[in-house]
Length: 384
Image 1 (cartoon, helix red, strand yellow):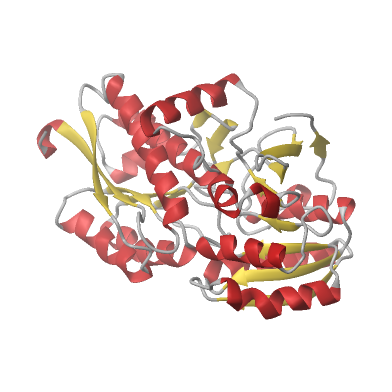
Image 2: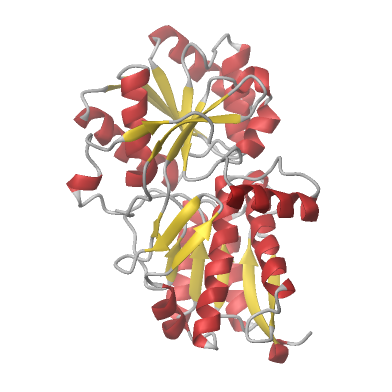
């Protein structure tokens, strides 16, 4: 196939390096959606052709490869990135070149670009529900541990404010390098066990997440006694950590593999047929999958890949995703998402314990108190 008879899109997910365990699942979700679209005849008779690069989890590479995609490969639509630091590298490139960038990852909020479609949760969609759940279910004394880059520090800043507004207390706040091994967590875990918080809020990502949970377990920490609660720990990482070390720990996310719905079962069946397993299916994977389908719908409407026309087609668009209905907010380019909280069970699978009854409007700047306060209603559920 040549560029003249395909719709070429750029893909920037790492298949090597410290965040590859997550980004591989995002790449898979993207490729599954492309397969589905192309199998149905493509868009206006033309197939979607992915141009894929591996940034190797090296932050500066994302920006450099985004430039390569736009200038050399002649694409003006890019899907990619997990870490906020890598998104920040791509952002000025797509703004300068007026390209469209789909970012399928939860993040710290406090950003807007007309060139970005934000597909992951913002703090009002995950941090606020999680803080409410922790303080009502476990207690108000929370300990923070995070990886040392933009997202964890900003996420913790927001979570600290939410917890304090709810009458809670932050007992400690520690950061580790992205490549932190198990020994790096020794002193932090010792401090946690000494201070005895009611729960731990973790923004440790990638391999570091696996190492932190493992270190906590080896030191005697148990999720059923004092859980690690996270916005990022997902099915792929829990599989690596193992059920014994992961049981009782908590994650807040729009999507979990264990959701009990026809839409999710069909999604998982197709995923397993293509990749041979669903063990690596994550919320970020599902977001990447959904964003590609929404892009294809906008492309169908526009009949071309002009950035301004595509943006107009995307804003306000609804999509029936595996998580449930989602919508791109016309005011801020972020996505209305479902909100769920789940606990790892004895088999190492997430059991959904609560959810919000409807998709939550994104509030990346936390400027609407009525959707960010403690009146948010969590519905206890049995099953998904």
